[in-house]
Image 1: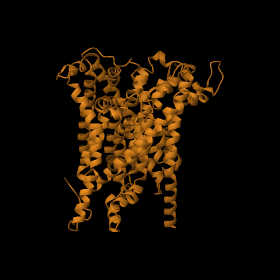
Image 2: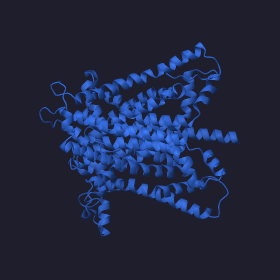
Image 3: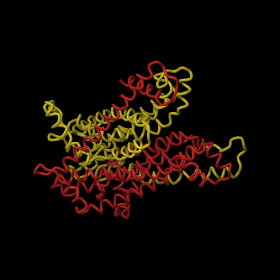
Length: 297
Length: 288
């Protein structure tokens, strides 16, 4: 375990050693809490994915979960998560930057609290909002109708892939704003001044200084958005009621008791599948992040 | 398109400081204001029009007129005040657990165990890896009965759900301050770890702590998946469970949930505003 002393020039005293032991103990509550409330339940799901209802080991849950309607569910879920993490991710950075460079604290405070609310807004209430807006009798739909455009004539419905993506953006964009704002605040004015002092033009500053500094945070943000889209349950349930096959909904239907005999643990296998999907994405993320820290140094 | 946006960003920066301008500065200023205005207007439209639409629907009556009766009847709906109380208690509980657990931990990691930072990045992102709908299955399977019998099991799990956001927020905050110097200064002046943490580090993490709190509270007030599968009626669960014969009332409740959460969070962040004002006052006095 690596420890750094507070003042490296001085020899390590007993007091310093004691304080580093105390610091190590400081990590203990976090470790215990995480194992109890995250590790143990997660392990129960993973183990359950490989067990038959009677308790024996089996591959059948995994095999059922990776075929037919469940395989289709995974594909749609991943597509939706990719679209609704990258597009709202970019939008979130642009908006956060626009807000941050506005004068006055009031707007920033409103945006930061509103982002917190919207990022966690979902489910039936969110579905209601969008049905009132873009449903067949929604306000925006009727505005468009008076302009002579009927979105529903052009294949749009709120309950399709595009519709659901739009609704997801309502909590994904605020989530990105929340995650990226501290990183944007970390861009020091002195860096910009230094770059300009050496004759860098604006885009050069962003290409060689601002961009590379922001990139790891941006990637991290997109990863959070991906996870959030992948596990969105309430919104998808309220909006699609099964019209699009999504894995989280399928897991939910197992929990609600819609189970064939002998398939009780297929829901756990689906859950395990989601974990694998995002683990793969995270490996990609950490490779990209390592690359990006090479650009930095 | 992205490159274009970045160029615009960059141009924008020139308006912030007072550097000598190139000949095109006025044009650029105009274009910059225009760019930022468009972004904020589009954002406003996207986020406010659905609220307007829902408000319009909740207020309109069958006869074609307008009435606020849907809103007036909310507090009298069965179960509303219980659900509201439970949500608030869970929000307070989760915030306390999260802060006590995460603030010392992330400070210690940054200060004493920087080698573990990558590991902590990994650990704290696990709740994102395991979707709530999956986690609650495991929780209900392994939780002891005395915990399953109380809604506060949800609070314990919400602290886990909040972990990625809270850690990331604290991590960004810690990266942006010179933690080692601050702590060395405080320690060399003879202060103890506890007071260094509370009186030096925490005040410097104001923005990060605030956004962590806002995130946690908003998460708890909006969480539906775990609460509904654990069968406790927090506000989001109540909205779904409660009699939906009257669509106008349902939409009105949804709006109140959204705006109500927002008001709670604005109240939390105004705690901080007083301190920011005081700090900027101090800075002014110092420079005068």
